[in-house]
Image 1 (cartoon, rainbow, N blue to C red):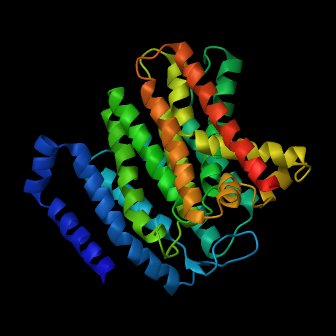
Image 2: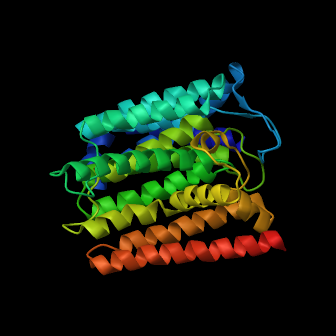
Image 3: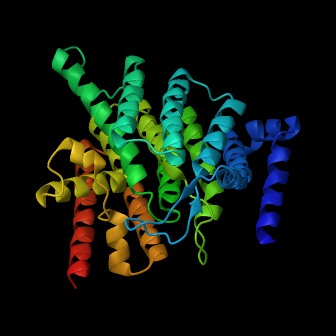
Length: 372
């Protein structure tokens, strides 16, 4: 009954936002960012039950198995609600800059492939190939990191390689960490929030609006995916987690995160995405050192319960506590990114070192907890 009331309020707010007078008020008085947030939040809130119904209608479920934590078959396609709400909020508010449209094209292709995987199943190698082609499409159209001078050939090559590594790494890290109720969507919300704050700090208002659109889309989905007492009624699926990781990592490349300070500009998104970077790095190093994977093919195909959320769950003994712990870790590091505004280059280096030390402490606690 409460959920119907909640959805009814959301529908009322969404329909009200469509009125020209209300739109004019937000754009000129209350703030365009608030309009975009409410638009994406309420649309995601309304679309999620529809996606849940479609998943049940077409039998698209996440079935429990040994490597998974959930205990009952759960509808997928939650990512569809986020994709629709995010895209619609941008188009409805004329946030249609060239780089954003290109990112939506590439992200849409990756999400469509993941949708087929959620429904029928695809090989991991094929999904990775589609991701590489999508990133190459962005690179060809100018969405590329500028860590090195592109006036010399090796600088240009390194920029391309790091762009591939960044987007594909973050995309799959978001997919890998989507193993507990509310974790991926919650981290997507936190990352979007801090991207929006830093974008506004650096006077990149369009980029801030895009991040806020993703924030609202994730938060509109969360009530169905993270509940204090009951299991999730719908999951993001690969469709949602892959799209989240792809778009957010691309935004980090599109943005300029500091004024004429390349070290700070590099450090800010690294801190915001640190939880995902740490999880991907940790499992890769551990699997190689323990001999679990010996080739790239084995790394791509390997599936295990050694991710940050699995280890935190083992340590704390409670799924929701594990999720909240990871939320707080991401928020702590995101606050560091905000502190970088007008900072010296050495401050950026020190905060990245601090993030590394924080995760080392977490790893020590995790290892000690598992041994005990």
